Picture (cartoon, rainbow, N blue to C red):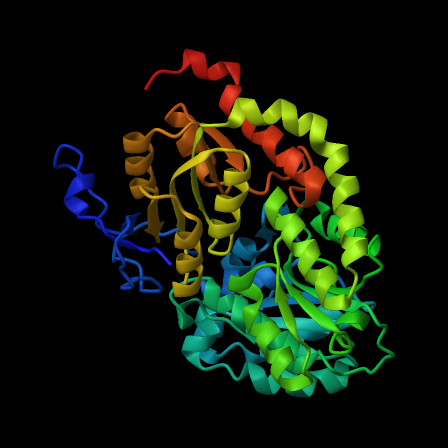
Length: 449
């Protein structure tokens, strides 16, 4: 496997007034280099995009609609965690104030639990998120959750997620999945069908879960539970009774997949349904595992023929265009492959909280000369965009304004409520159209930088 060597940061100086001091940057070359400096604390004073451990837990648990979500901390923490992936969720807070910090917030937590249970008596379980303030003053929220479950008649699960518990929100992903595994999964038995599976690492962005279920259903495969985009309580507690776990997001869902494999012996298959080649490869892997090769090939042939006319129109318009990427860790490699399907060139890709595995996978698919950046601030991204001048920049919501200021087309990944899901065959066309519109928008002929 070809990896990279470090780039001297002096290269990224702009008139001596600024540099990429906060970020780690590598450029893929033909030389081998395995010193991947990642998962380190952000530089002091830097405006980081990593979020905190609490937000990482919210990233995983927010889609669980039949639960009550109570944040034990100042009201600002609840406000911060109420919007996830651009979508607002109902969330409650103990709203700790100065008096509670001095005398302790346990009584307020107990009172809040009774109140939220009255407001949502239909809820199946309750999450209590422990944030920085009650952790620092030593509130025994675990004891409260353990005993309040008996009084409220439903599980009360403490999510131990103070922001200082890890260097990024990635730690919160693991904490959230550990809570589901230890407190809920395995509580109910059921009969296992011959083709029952779970999907791990899909958060139902733009109804992606429905697309995946539809594709797999045509192969005869039944999706039992989707963590956590479509995970009702009854399906979570019986999620240990399946034949296979499909791991979609390696960075966030890997801990749950490994835990279920160790305890219940459920094998895990890493797949992706983003991009044409990866969707075809994923369906073939699943078909081979279950002995459904012919069914997989039939679905692939039907879906490909349906999108071929539009694909033939789009490919010449996107071939050779330059793209830049920056978002969560697991998307680096899958987007490199998807853009390669379109004939586009990636000038740089990066992540807020990638680990060695995700960066090595990105290097495997990156072309020679591609820059890879870890833990970049907005200042660092501005440097890269000015130097490399891509035709389109793909990132989260925050990067939208920076891209437009520099006169570069922007494509939000995934783009919410515009074209629809990006997964599967039709999703690949949605993705290609989004890139086409971002690159060829008439406004860029009037913008000069």
